[in-house]
Image 1 (spheres, one colour):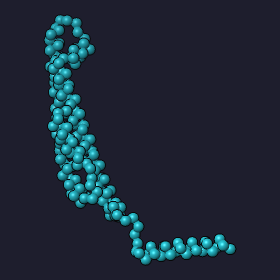
Image 2: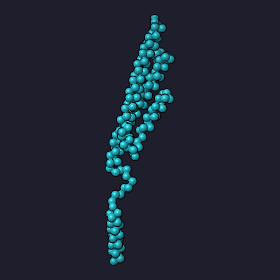
Image 3: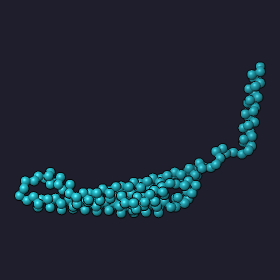
Image 4: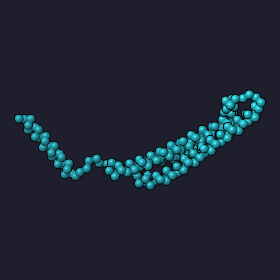
Length: 165
């Protein structure tokens, strides 16, 4: 892969991280980010398909050339296939195809990750509504806390009285 392709992927990978303290911004930005990634993924899939077509055409051209060079000689399909696949021009097209395939699969995986990000935003919003991100875990008034302490002391004193008898 080219350096600029890796950099572009890495730039979008940064957006996968969700800031749970800015869910409103994350939720509003999600559709735009998903669209950008999906669009780039579609472009890369098209480039992969074009590279595959070029590879198939190169195979046909190279194998046809080998057949023409070996007119009158006894050659098998297996030998023509091996000679074609070992040809430098064919290998170059094959390398281009494999690179395009890897890049397309990376963008497709990133698109899936952004789809998962959408589900996680929904889950985080539900947790926020339920009070998961609050700083205090015990709710109640001061009177409730005082009453709980009073009941604890009362039970402790009763236990001491029964142990003396």
